[in-house]
Image 1 (cartoon, one colour):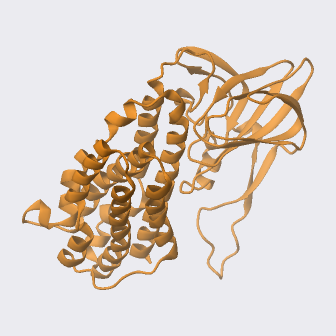
Image 2 (cartoon, rainbow, N blue to C red):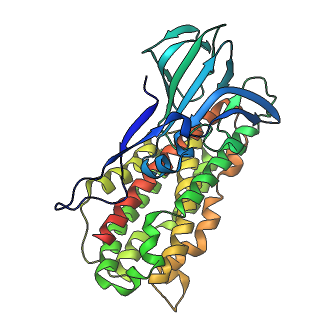
Length: 371
């Protein structure tokens, strides 16, 4: 197994007349290692864990959107990673040596073996005396498990964490993704005045946004149609009444004159509609209120600078969203607090995926502005 990665630089895309950027290498020893993590006041040993994003060049190279995470891991001579679980799927590749998988399944793993760990599955690893294990840990949904060692995304068996920690972890995850979304590249042409100055860029933005706005309306219609809980149905109906027709408001008040055909934007919007048909009520709350409505609050506040409006807030698509979405993002939290702890791993997973899909949709809107 090599200790170095060879990667092409991504400082700039090559011009056809220029040479392609050169690869660069990163030695494993140059990625900062951690050996333990504190969870709920208890210290847990990790062996050796080197998250790729702790290295400045690798962090810059790896994509932020459609995000995945990589880390070198090592255990040796009787070291053990205690049984734990986390809210995202994970894959561990045995690159050198051997190690025993423990937890929900026990098995001796050797070089070349791959372990696929579903969200919420209990698992750990241990080595015997004189045994060495080098592996690569991959997460496909958002931040790495120990990327921020002060807020590790794991729960160890027997730590005594309260049942309410599931809801608290969901809130922490959503807040983390919301902070990340506030730096989305969609907002750059608003912050630097491009959309306000350039009528063509503004028109392209509105046309792409209209595609997303229509998907949002379909999402709310579908949720209302498939809700079987009378109490939640009444809650959803109030939300739908307040959101009804915002796509028409966008088109008529802001002069959307042509529609964009963008298959990626359409697919991302349809993902949200599809989840209303097959997800449970708790997942629908996470998707609609924790993710979409939280993002809309930031979106309205950051984009309305390019659409000044002196009249009533309800007459402007952007002023309206900046004003009302804070209340909408809080809906459904009481229902989530009543759930049992074993329901939250799936909700954490769906929260990550909803943010990934939303960022993908807004990536496409940004691309239309900047083309």
